[in-house]
Length: 420
Image (cartoon, rainbow, N blue to C red):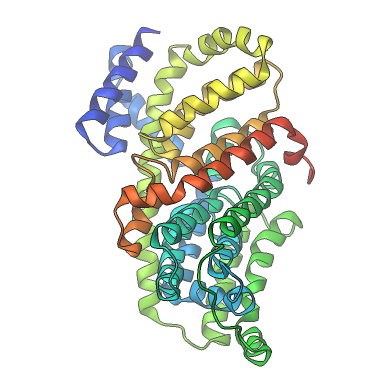
């Protein structure tokens, strides 16, 4: 355990200095392997083998799909379509935010892309309608987190790569909890929007005109989502099919294909994917130290008495640990560093691995919107022209909804198995 203690101490010291997360994690892992007498070639081998996994090919494809839809304004069209039907309800744009988040999640797989697209499309509209900006920022930041729970999810792909659980099984497990959480968000919107202004009702003629123009967008989740669960495409193939369908709609139906849109999407995809892969590779080096030092096995043995005493106590301690880690470490890094240990503990003690995986994903959703480093809060703060602290305050009610759904998943594991 000495090497494990060393890397944890080094990681903590580097994080305090404020260096980028991949440098902190990779540097700690490198020092740990050196202390264990491993050759330098091991660092390169671990890094290359982790980012070269076939399971990760879908990540840049889903990121590109999300970036392309944002750059071309497809997301804006989708929100306008939804707003035409529910925008006149009290709190209607809040409902549109949640609905659009769930819809966008079904073909993007990325919370950051989800939050960025919704910020551009909906925060100005809520400002014009007189919504409190703290609420607007909170619902957009929280809604964006649905991108990692409602499949296809990049974080589920990472979880599958780390644990060996079938990604399709994880996707199925996330559907019921994902839409349950979306429903919980809508309840929060209903409670918080009792006194917000209402918008004029859109006439039915205008609604049907929007359906005729933009209704095809509703088929995009069917192409991605349906093709996976229908057994037509693999996860990688469905992402490619979604990209093709989005580009086909933009060029043949909307007749608005532009090369600069494609350029922007490709550049943003390269930046996002590079950062994800850097974190995966360096976190794998860190995790390799924990594997060689038998940390996972030792922790599993140490936690076993807790699980035997109370399953709920284990869940509580594990979720508290993850909440703390989520405040300082990127979600991908947490997945690669901690999940090998916790998944082994869950498996060796006869608990439901799929149930725990979904609880982990919901927990990481909270990490995206709670201080001090919630990524979605930082993304939304600039669009809402609020401080990050104000955005965090706006997300508090939605964090409560996440905790509620996490407890429901812990109490009723059937929620993660209803669809197979």
